[in-house]
Image (tube, rainbow, N blue to C red; front, side, top):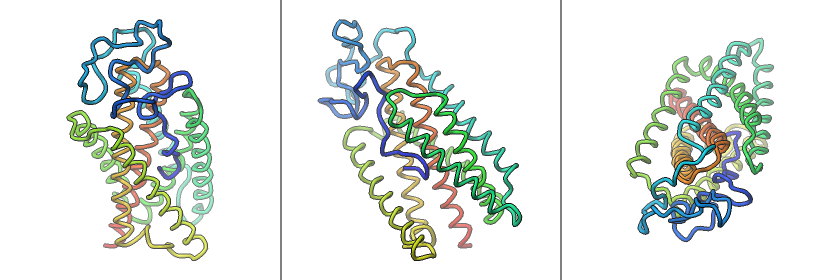
Length: 296
């Protein structure tokens, strides 16, 4: 659902041929079935059931099963996410410095940025359809995504305002912290109904953006006007809200993975999902601020 990331192929954490989270067959909304560990390796596994899970668990995640070796923890998720986001930031800074957006280099810089975005999209699609996370693939996606973000951010800073990028970064951080607090305090309740609503809204949003792009390509200008003016502001806000909703889904996947003992390698999948969502929010924030400052 982001500008170059396949949100619609987002999965829960995988186990063998099945999926945890919202893609599993569950009798109760909001997570893995009560008393069942979706990461158990078979009926003989002592972790296949969680005897401590309350029958009326509101979110489908009872107290954590006994500790096992080589399982995902919050520290793993934080470390992998820091590595992935750090790669995005590093390559973005390098692209900003080495690919200046000026009269002499604007064509070359934009061409490299578009190429990097396409490569990032392909890499993210490959990872999205793989059964297991591939760290090298995820970090390569982050590197190419960073190149794209660096050039776009440099262009906005040059032609819109030098403070726009800083505002977009701060706005993205505020959305992340706000959603995290709302999720932890259960102001946001992630269940099947929430998931279905978010996916339906995201598909409608992407369809409208695709139609607008086609009109812009063949009709010139801004197409249907979804990228400028009042409609642009409205759709920018909607895009940020959708990104915030996907953050809540990411947090739910991480919580389920930690609670039910997902393999440690799945922390890379968590980092991948969080990075894609944050990139989406940043781009929508950057576009919204550009429209607002351009109208001044």
